[in-house]
Image 1 (cartoon, rainbow, N blue to C red):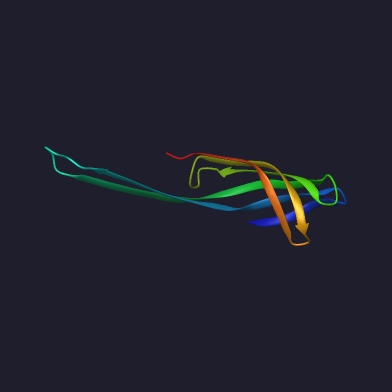
Image 2 (spheres, rainbow, N blue to C red):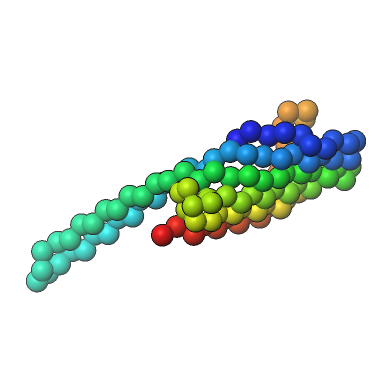
Length: 111
């Protein structure tokens, strides 16, 4: 992921992003038959999607902040369409360490 800080102020920032997301899924099915023979099926699929997005932070106090992140991608390269969104709040523990809790959602259309 490449990021560029498009806006920065004392109370927050906004970054624009461009990069790629890698997906890898493996599914296994094992059926143990009494009358029929056992059946084992394993399928694996993986792909890479280009993505663009934005990320930002609003500083509520010296140590408390709200984070937001969103991206879209796919564009037919790996999947038809993919998206991701995150909204959370955090506590700045030190200059280089923060604890963040939030909700993240991810979707994709892969055929």
